[in-house]
Image 1: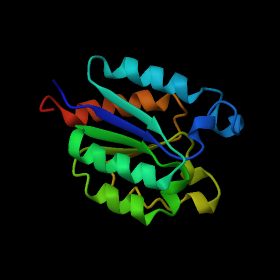
Image 2: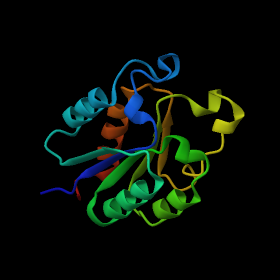
Image 3: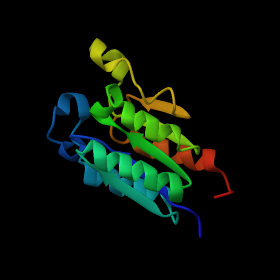
Length: 146
């Protein structure tokens, strides 16, 4: 059996569909999860969301030990959490940083990602449905080995 893919979502993403829809759209996180489950096919998927930095770090450690690869949308943690960046440094597998909006087109406070320097790839600005592209790319990066 292949190792799972982890998709980890940070703070406020549980409010997708109602939070700033002009930026993030009307797709809910449950709908994103359904799209991702369809995209992974038979491969196991751990799809999670937390508003807690501590929980996110614990999940990254778990993914480091158990997963074939990870997609992370760290949300606000992207811009200030050295602890999450340090946890991701230990990951050592294909890692995609994903953002629903184009963070580089937004206010300057959103331009400096601490995660980008440790991620294998970065995708941004494709909307909620862009998670599916991230899943497909991650599966290609993982290859047949895991």
